[in-house]
Image (tube, rainbow, N blue to C red; front, top):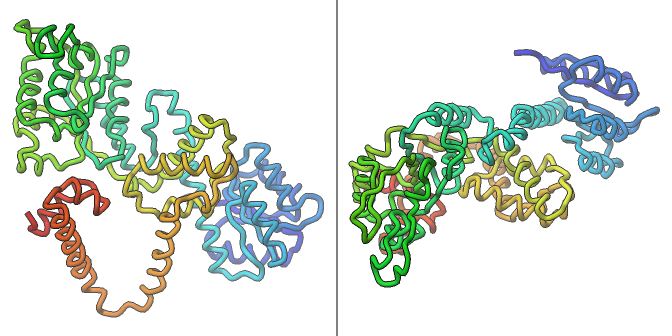
Length: 458
């Protein structure tokens, strides 16, 4: 792996030497400059990965150096070194885009921690920088650069050129419809309609007429012919979201359409040929849905020609910041605010949060944050209280871990006992209503079904 290049900027030769020794122990290449002007020259001559600069220097101080770097669109991470009396200035520097600051006198551990944090965030942003242009290249808001997402992109590209039916699985809020739209946009059907319908949001009798359409006089209230979603999507793509919530009998009619590629409107005996691609999605485990008669097995095998399983957001750490920045820019433009970025502390909170609501929760949170900030730099104070609370237990847990004894071997057993008890209480309280129980527990129905099976609670 290529060594990182770190530039130390300080007018005191002794201080530069101390930092040089520390950084060389961490196996970094070290460059030095005695003021901001010389530092700018080094950045022009060398590929610098991180700058550690003193605040107060002659010719061009640390804050001036930072401003000039940003004015030249140089996004190299900058760590400020400051004494206790100038902490306020260091905080100001962070508002201008500094990654972090460290206090004098400092120890090796403090320097190493600040350097690793800054490089990690820089790596995430660098890896995702090209994705900012993908919004214009067909992916829409389905963006990310994690290995999991790269696999999803590959699957989308593989299946888009075919006529194959697709089944998308994933928790609520993971972006199933975005994947379906990405498949459509990358397919030869891109010039035709993408028609989406949520099977869970429409009563069974109305859903049938929405899908198949009807002839005038087919039933009371049918005063004129209606084109259904199947016909509307002719030549294009029909996306059936939450397919496991479709009425069991209606699933049989859907299966027949998939097999014969023909349909009849309600109240008509005329068969209509259709040319559409079907993409279905569910947040349930399909095998569990089949077992509980929420999904026909024959329909599952007809849809399951090509499956795409979406990871939850917590498993996509590399994507969190790029998504947050995208949503902030989107809503800043919507509300007429400038976009000023996200503070280092706020980024750390976003990276450590569990994201039970996945990408949808992140977008809602960023919309709220841009409103609260008024277009200023997003700080931790602009984030909901629950996300601020979540990081504190992580820190406390780290300290407690140092004092753990052999009882750690029983941790999994204790956690499983507690989880089983909580799930049973939720099922009892909701009279075994899985949807309500999952909502109470703040997990997806698919996760709940898995845990019910795991703990033999059915």
